[in-house]
Length: 314
Image (cartoon, rainbow, N blue to C red; front, side):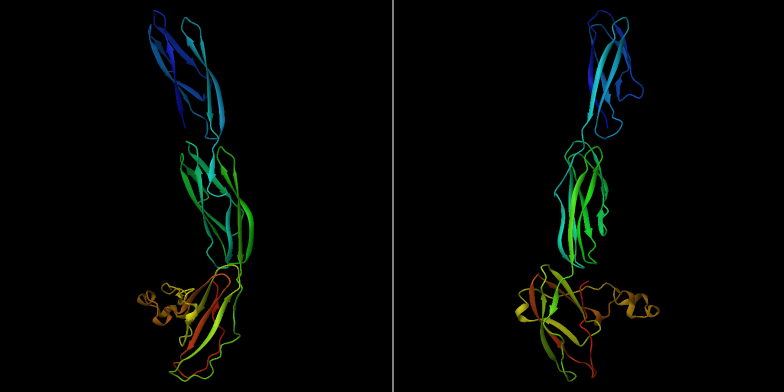
């Protein structure tokens, strides 16, 4: 980073005058040209160049001596200031709020440089489970930088901590970080679902409710891939609240362990078995809501079933 000013050397005499500048060792201020001559009755522009040793906030002062041949020396007092770097953020804190275990917890944070010089920053954090991207960077004059924060929601936790944004040549910014990862309180209004005896080819349906008693939204999954004779649908009374979704399976993701790897050829690895598709039901529960469902059993063969309902949160 450099800046310069012009100093005018004026010769009011009737003969040419020689000059030279004497600079300290490793000068912060330099001159161009360092020596030369000024013809009678003319003016010569000399450039004084300020080159700070770094971009950190500082004030520099030096005396430059201009020696005049057959005349009195002149002294030029040079002052230079590198302004203190200043960054501002779009928020005073990073508050994820209350989040269900396994839920999405991502926040975007904007850092803006309000000065006309480049500024470097470095984010320091000792918070377990917090991912920051990027942790450092360079922001141009009057430019802004986007930083993404992501919290690990795989386990319950209460977070009240802070991060430090170190600014080269400026004061650090302390930003509080808050989050509460909760296990939602989700219940069914039945202890068991008993279809009794159902004839092959016939259908039996039982109603039950799923109740989210928590003050947070949550996503519940029902994995019916191993239970092809069972199906879950929304009761007519709940269709105005949500629409059932199905988890999109990637090729061999979550189902590959059911097969012998030696039996998988390249073609099979690019396919999802038809009986696996649309069998993981995604139920997005609003906070403090009760939804009514229809659970249908249509046996394709004569056999008994006894299993725990395969619900999971994440």
